[in-house]
Amino acid sequence: MWSQKWVLGNWKMNGRTARNQDLLEGILPQAACGVQVGVAVPAVYLAAVAATAGQALWAGAQDVSRFEADGAFTGETSAAMLADAGARFVLVGHSERRQYFGEDNTVLAEKLHHSLAAGLVPVLCVGETLAERDVGEAEAVVARQLAVLKDWRAEGVAVAYEPVWAIGTGRVAEAAQIAAMHAFIYRQILSLCGEGAKIRVLYGGSVNAANAADILAIPQVDGALVGGASLQAEPFTAIIQAARTAAGALS
Image (cartoon, rainbow, N blue to C red):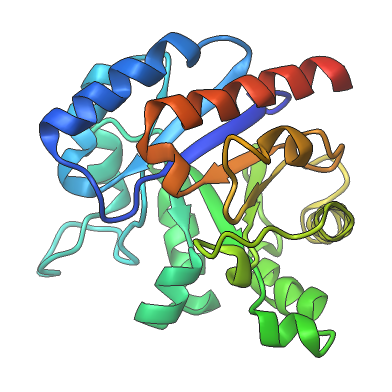
């Protein structure tokens, strides 16, 4: 798993039962061929998606509660509940969670810890705004977000770099920008977690069938976190195929 390219879809607040089934049926034939494929789905659909996905495809959650134990936390879903429903991974700290729900490193540290304890693979999302990049603060911002991994003792570390200015905008960072930031993230993780850490750093931000091959061919890119293009089988499977081709070229 930690040596493969990863392609993870993020359905965000989209989906209906019949539509989800059709989408999964289009994805599954491509899901077990040398690339780790998964989809992060709304919690209400997690169990059904996990049952359909089986072992071929990771079912994942888009968020997890900061509270670990069962209790009076109306509306919350714990890491243990997500695992019980069939989740294999969970997104933590997506920019939309940071923006709309004010999540900071204190909250995210709890979410990471509980996810790991429940046997989930947490995928920490990091990235700067356009204003932060324009004033030369991109690396400093990402370093602050990665600081939540200090003394991380998991088997591996999964991070998704999503420049906020490229999410859902149609803009994609230039190859040199992606390579430089991914290399920086690798260095930061090694300094925080030790030289023996297993690392996957995915790129997200308007990844689609047309640009996936170029992005995934960048040596520092270990996969993709895909938003809108993961809501249709044809572009998503094209991205999976691009990851498979890139993995072969880099091996």
